[in-house]
Length: 255
Image (tube, rainbow, N blue to C red; front, side, top):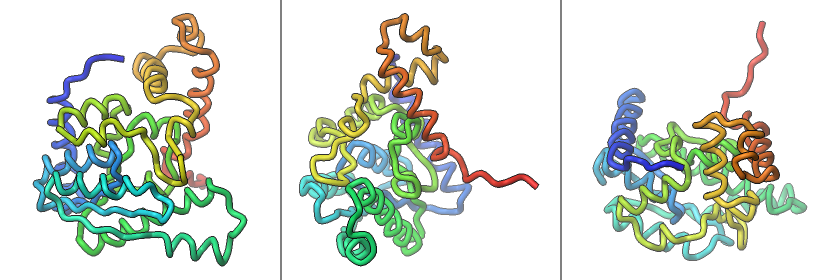
């Protein structure tokens, strides 16, 4: 990877946030807080851009969510000094599967949880007249590690240009709690779920490969000669290719 200019990145993101709100005619932002590093960094940057009085946090636990997730999200909100509320989505999610899809596996349930969270978040955005800030990072966006119209639903992505390892560096500079920085990344969609376990690759390795492919425009053969694993390189290449539809607006047939 490469060294990053943290101060420059923060300044650029602050300017970007203000530009997006100005273009949309909003003055406030709403952020879904999970207790994880991406949402915590996003909220902290929004506070820097707009002031704590213009940022709202929402926690959206499911009954099988890890109890630490809610507690950590509350502590982040309190440290940032922003208003927040908790909406338990268990009833909404469980009623659907109980009546219509009792046979659903954990992946279907996880996708439903992610989409239910965004339904609530968008309803509250109308209530508070606040634009929804996304919390996705470049690593996950590029390999499609997100639920379409779930956690990738937002008005704009403040940290969408940063790799996961870069977000980690930002978290340290923004003085976020150690439990956020040191926590094993997880979407918390089912018990014992972790991002790296589900993707089958660590973020550090994923970011190295993505940087070579996207920033340096290195080809697969060149990367393998440099010592990158053929299996991991082809895996990431396939993930990028197969998730392209998540990064584009729905195609429309030409007349």
